[in-house]
Image (cartoon, rainbow, N blue to C red; front, top):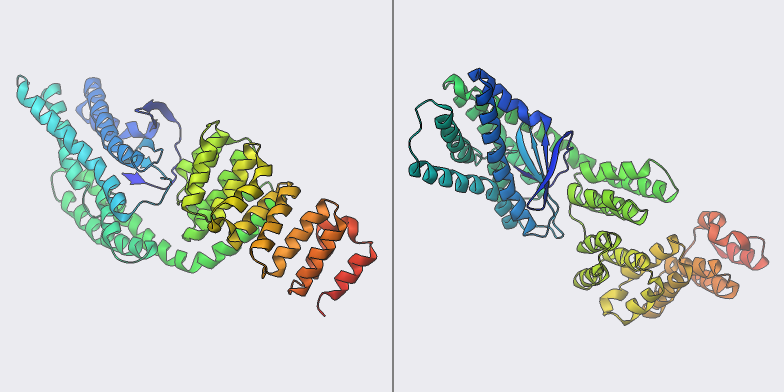
Length: 457
């Protein structure tokens, strides 16, 4: 099973395999114990646990290697329901790539099953019904038999994810249709396996559980459709709270990144969570959220995390990502990267000498806001002036932001000049002017009062 969604690891056995972090949750052993103890022998219990662990690991490694090929850093967890591979590649995978990752798991199991079958032909036949005989049979059953069943169009099986990516519509529409199909097919398979011998009761239970889960999924997708704008409002309030020093805002943003059905909210919340973690010294936590939280982020963010992890080439990685996709999000990361590298004074020159896309209004606005918020007023005001020079028709907000920077630098003449132009160009937020700490030292001055009086005329 493969998932871009974070899942709690729980307590268990932790190790690394082929560079992939692996957790075997203690609940994973329950299925082996359940089957093994039916035989009434500790050796059978050990055999079932070993066969299941190896088979599920091979399956998840198939997903993990395919996800790594997309640039992701996957993690694997084995649990009571089997296993899950969690990943988040630097760039959004195409539907075809997602299908490839989904199919890599069962096909890795098929490969192991073929190897087992060939090896079985090369050795002496074990005694029928013996421990060795059942180990062979169980390896084939899991890797070939269950691998084929895993391709059934039922979420959360791999076949269900393949079906979802083949359906038309946006993400939410595809998930809703896939859930409906999963209810029908899952219910039918549960009934089919229930009517077979008792050995298939576990399969009947699992497909029945999948059908019930997808009934809930249909309801959830309906609610998420109406929740989209509520999430955007919550995102905005969480950002304000974070900037005001709230101790709970980061958790609220992380929850939005993990649960929101709105990809815009999900992406921006994830970006803010990771940025805040790595720039406040919580680099390992930032890396974990980058790999585990759902949703795609700008590739530049991967460079930012690598920078704070100590990579000497990370700033070039950020620059390359910015050149390839010069969005406001990338510009913000670029600014934070130069701050982290101790090269913040270079930012205005980099933007000024870069391609025209570097001087898009939203790009410059994002960088200026980031630098000012971090207390780097001089390069921030230089970016503001670059914005004004690049776009003489810039709106009043640009002039107001630049006025704030000059005010922080105690350049009264330029601060008042930019504030005056901001008001002339329609900026009229008197409440902000009266409470903005940037202008706190100026409020007693006659010139400030005169400019304030021009607002709303």
